[in-house]
Amino acid sequence: MTAGSGLLHIEAPPESLVMSGGLFHGLQLWVNLPAKDKMMAPRYQDIRGGNVQLLTSPDGGALLRVIAGELDGHQGPGITHTPITMIHATLAPGAEITLPWREDFNGLAYVLAGRGSVGTQRRPVHAGQTAVFGAGSSLTVRADEKQDAHTPDLEVVLLGGQPIREPMVHYGPFVMNTQDELMQAFEDFQKGRLGTVPAVHGMSEGGL
Image 1 (cartoon, helix red, strand yellow):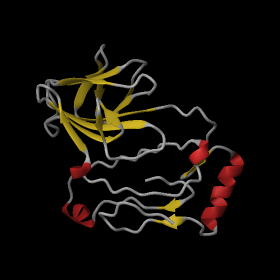
Image 2 (cartoon, one colour):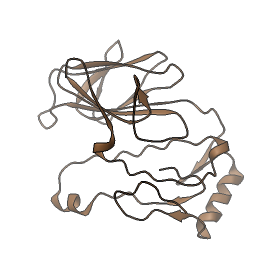
Image 3 (tube, helix red, strand yellow):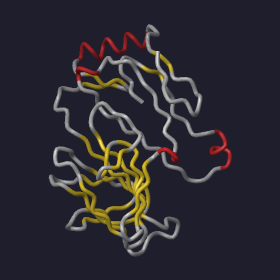
Image 4 (tube, one colour):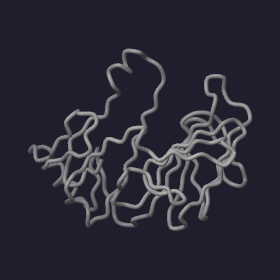
């Protein structure tokens, strides 16, 4: 979703999932827009599992889902105005991946489930932890040989993007470049000037 000049939205799991119970992950990633694009027209994307780019490691030990950006020539469906790469990786016990990474991107790994290590020094990580990578042209992640009984694999989200390096102020759901812009955003919200996204699954775009 690109909030742009303003978009009202609520993230909620499907009712059927709530009724059936079980564990699911909800991950919300906010990617800041450059100042020149802050007030662009809003846009909404409904990306399903069947739309992502699926890749495997040469030994078959890892499944990679390219959600946004590009990995070694493979493009994900997510569209962002700030260049980023977002990948959901599933690594079988003992599997290791080293992925090419743009040197002008930062990089981090967030562990959804399981245990493993990151980097050439194999720093340990486990569920709920975030690892920040240093400068370089690749990211390395490895799954421990033994995982928790309720988690058969290491599930990790790999993220990176091109730093904007612009001033930023935020409060609540609003992220702007100046305090005046932040106050204007609150006023627009209070006066009902924001657009809405209808709860229709399968739609490709929405907006004002």
